[in-house]
Length: 416
Ligand code: UD1
Image (spheres, helix red, strand yellow):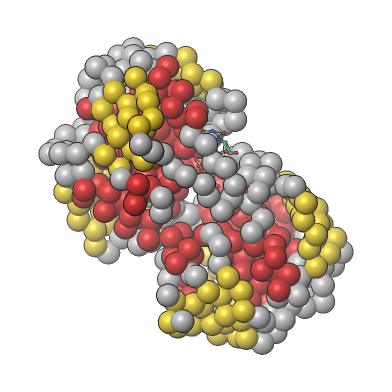
């Protein structure tokens, strides 16, 4: 197993290229199952999760070719409709294949995702949605088996605007008979991109980027070429590292996806410059504590909550950080405390009392974004930190240590 070794407090400077978004690429890869022909995707990040999705598609008989961030997928000869436990348990986003399989083939057998480091993450909205579209959905030996002769459009309402359920139901509905209306749909940029790519394939979707989506089913979809949007979570992670460590510029970013994060950094006293496709941040001399509550887009993303906690641990004053999306997503707190942070955590709230400085220590990754918060904290801490179990970080960040090294950080990957 690999670990990251960080000697902190090295100033950062220079520029870094942000990759395509993991959370946009994964559903679009699943959408390739909808088409009898080739889908070409550019700017695909080379991540463990992308590789897992490629393995899953390969197992289903999709022909894939992935090189230099360009991925082609041809689902003309799909031979299996199953997503096995081994893959779904390592990546919940595997569940995204269910909608396209049901929509095109009327059959899917997908392992039910189990627990997660963030607490319970049910898929009940997905399943109720498929049932509403006319599928027979049952659980057998840990697998969800869904079948439908032909899905039929209907009205579906989500209690919470779930990203995964929105993507999955949209992908099922594009080939259904008639119109599906989703209310309280997710508006995240990756859902917008999924809908745009589906439209480029010939789907008919109205209301993109709003909470009401209307999908008029079509008979078939066509091959397409698309370019992945920039990863706002990777960009946010680098921005938060730059807030105390350096003058850095992020290229290939979309500032509008990060408006609330930029606002919060501004409130904390950071100087930020936004250009066409780049954002620069200067090292902040006096970082002020700023409260933050996560919310669905355009609110502060839960995927940057852990990194915000890390940053606030060295701010002047106290901040209250609340996660309204995933109430148990605080596994990073005890690890940050090992680095000297002063954080009290109860239910879905963390109270962070800023300290003068963090001190290096051995810490452990527990999930993708918690690991990113540990990297930021270790870069800010005095002395050496070892971050173990970094396979988590490799799920969502491509060569994070090389990117930080290119900015001047003393960070390397070693085997444990
Ligand atoms: C996606 C992202 C993840 C991000 C999350 C919230 C991907 C691959 N993952 O996860 O990085 O943190 O959005 O922005 O894009 N819920 C239910 N029932 C369901 C589905 C969801 O109760 O059937 C609840 C969840 O428990 C959670 C909330 O809805 O409290 C939002 O979850 P959701 O948006 O579905 O997250 P994911 O799609 O799993």
